[in-house]
Image (cartoon, rainbow, N blue to C red; front, side, top):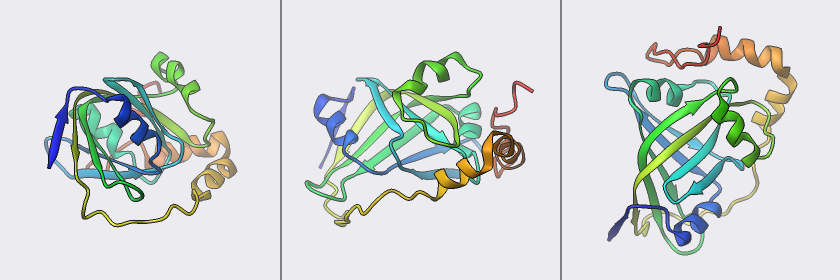
Amino acid sequence: MSDFFSEVTPELKLFIENQKIFFVATAAKEGRINLSPKGQDSFRVVNKNKVVWLNLTGSGNETAAHLLKNDRMTIMFCAFEGKPLILRLYGSAKAYHERDSKFNEYKNLFPRIPGTRQIVEMQVESVQTSCGYAVPFMDFKEERNQLNAWAEKQGEERLNNYRKEKNSKSIDGFDTGLLDSE
């Protein structure tokens, strides 16, 4: 009931563009495995073997820490409306910060979202689709605005202080690369 592809086909790209949520999984050799839900208008297919997504300021920064230790990543989309489908992207990834030229190369692909912390680029090595028959139907109601409102209220200085305190180390104590320029 599953198929593998070596690239994101036009049909799969269209499916991705219509999803409201995706899930990112990473793991270092030791420590916890991280699985994070992501939303908003934060994902782009750059080409058939490259995707990028905005990583927003949050309570942790596990993805960035894991990518410094082990660049493997899995991204999953699943259909909650329409035809059932689960789509997984497998590959290697790197997180870019505002100080990186790649960050500035990609930032204009996205709307301005308060609290943008990093842009993650993934080289897609393989794509898997599976049936999704057991995934429930769920209606999309609207985006949550709390994270954007919180980030906007903080302002740049308070956001930077928050990131230093909460986002410079993973929950397992791994460096996230956030403070490399300081």
